[in-house]
Amino acid sequence: MRIIPSQGPPRLLAAAQLTNSVGDGAYYVCSALYFNRIVGLSPTQIGAALTLGWAAGAVVGIPVGHLADRRGPRGVAVLMSVATGTAVGSFLLVRSYAAFLVAVCVYACCQCGLAAARQALLAGLVEPARRTETRAYLQSTVNAGLALGAALGGIALHLDTESSYRVALATDAVAFVLAAAVLLRLPSVPSAAGPRGREERRLTVLRDRPYALVSALNMVMLLYMPLLSVVLPLWIMQRTAAPGWTVSALMVLNTVTVVLFQVRMAGRVTNLESASRAVRCSGIVMFLACVGFALSSAPSSAWAAAAVLAVAAGVQVLGEMLLGSGSWEIAFTLAPEDKQGQYQGFHGAGTAVARLIGPLLLTALTLAWGIAGWLLLGALFLAAGAATGHAVRWAARTRPGAAPGTAPLASAPQARLIRKH
Image 1 (cartoon, rainbow, N blue to C red):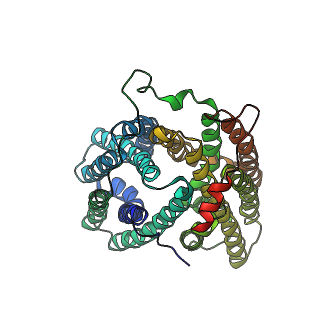
Image 2: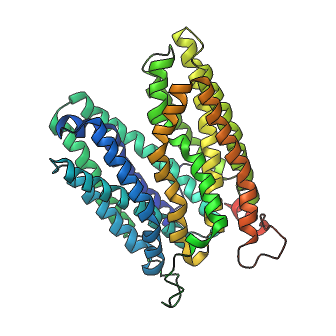
């Protein structure tokens, strides 16, 4: 089973992604404790700063993506990678809440800008028929890197010293700089934008209502992201008889499954029709996963509760992979080739918004409402997945070159190209 992309730009993109995701894994494990115990900030202060930071990031990603279209995505991606590393490094120097707030906002904005520029770079270096496949490889790489970085962060947690936490954060800062060096080895992608007329400088994506609807529905589906990291640990400890180590076991299950099977799952998505079908199936699967998580509160046996959670988590990661495969194809295909940066920045803002509102919304639903809250969350996934197909058909009809009254979802030549690879 191949988990490494072919030589050339896809492999270099994966190498850059692996490098900074290793650092991110260490950062995610250690950052909250570092800010709380070493810097001396309260959990409320940390949460408020992160909320503001990701809100700013959701907005900034769009103009940075537009800059990538105008100036070329490689240079912007390198700049954003170095800037992100610098922002992480600044965390080692902050000693006041004001400085921390500024550093967090810069960090989140650079992260979102980097994501948009990298997507534009992928679109510029990889032919359309292989973009979803390549994006699947990158997602597998991200999960592998996060797992390795989390292990390094675990060492810092075990040592539980200021020096160990600072080393973990410094590792993330250095990783982003190294990733920038890898990105520099990629071929330069010329600007896809035309002459610098007034019309060309506008953010076209902000007036593309069908694409906005598709992105909004994708944002709803991305609410699965806080499940494993925030909601399930609280649910397991407060509402189930499962042992505490179940949290780590579910994280390992999720990571390994994505690493091994995301590329194979993406191979089934060849056009907008199959992408819409994948997202619709993802909504169904996510609903079933929510039912499973709800039922995990019923068993009184620790092992039985852990088994129910494991099954539900396995179903959830299937929905996650289906969503990724479908949403990447939709985002790339519906975006104009000369505006991939701003469109990917807009679509990718859903990740920042999910990080922003997801923890509060999902914990309120599940911990306050219990089983009913899980079922409501599942129904939300179900409805968003079902509506995506209609939104994609509307968007496809509005693309340049689409015949009136048609919805050009399928592309036989594109499907043949993907199957060759």
